[in-house]
Structures are given as structure tokens and as C-alpha cells.
Length: 218
Image (cartoon, rainbow, N blue to C red; front, side):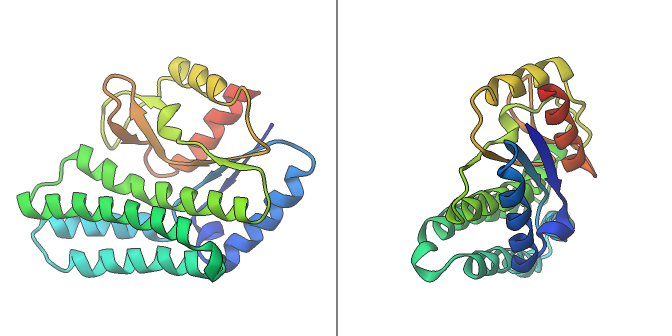
């Protein structure tokens, strides 16, 4: 089992994603792969700004959120032919609608808790991994999307969560017992061992996700 990690610049555009697909296609002929992906390039910073504007009561958060939405939909349209777009667009729009609802809640109460910020920031990787896994599958790869929140376990210090290595390693080993040829996982995101709430691993979190999976599966 080989773990590959692709950061924001590697998954910034449809063209860069096509290159990623070629790398994964080639490597998967030799090994089973776990592919850890970051948010599309620049999206995490934009989500941070959306969160700040919403908490400040600045309605311009909606314009920036619309740009984020358009960016993801444009990537879908570029990667998938018209006849193959329906499923990925539906799933992407549902995720974007959920994100919009959370941001609206922050705007209405003018408050951004560390827990809410983690939830909002998690959408960058959740969206990218969903699109990328669907793209791999469309390209003929035996690809399955795994939710890293199910196996990266942390404490509840939102924004600076510490990983519980024992619980995480066991959960990773259980999840990947019968892994497909290509397993796609969002980096950066995790969940609290105590209550299941979404947490994040901080800047460089996707590297950390990949390192944890590699260590658990060695």
C-alpha cells in the first residue's frame, strides 16, 4: 500500500487534476494506493475569509462564497462530459448548500466559534476529495472515497486538535483492511474521539493525514 498526497497547487485546476489522475493511473498498476488530497488551491484561505466576514456581519461574505461555489462547479464541468456530470454536480451542490447554511448561521448570530470555523474549513477538503474520487472513477479507476473524519481521531481542542494516535491507528487499520485499488481521502479533517464533532489538524494538516495513514499501514 502506497500513500500519495497532493497539495493545493496540485489540485488547483482541472488541468492539474488531469495530471494527478495520470500519476495515480500509472502508480495504481503497481500498488494499491491511498490518495490524500488538500482543498483546491486557495480555497482554505477563502473559507477563512468568508468565516471572518460572516462573523463581522459583512454581507460581502456571500460574494466570496459564490466564487468558491463557482470554482468547484467549473472544475466539475471541465472534468466531466455533459452526460456524466449529473451525479457529481448534485453531490457538490448539496455540500455547497450545507456550507452556505452554516455560513448564514454565523452571519445571523455574528459569532464564529472555533468549532464552527473547523466545520467551515473542513468543506475545502470534503469538496475536493468528493470531486476527485468521482473523477478517478469516471476515468476507469477502482476508486472509493473514504471519510477521514471516520478514522483520524483527536481531542476537542477546535482549531488545534491533538491526534489520539492509538485510536487513529486502530481505526485506520480497520478501515483499510479490504481497501480498493485507489482509496481517496480528504486531508486536514478529523473528528473528536469524545463526541464526533469535526476538528481540523491545522496548517499542513493534509501532510499529517498522509503521514498518519502511512504509519498505521506500514
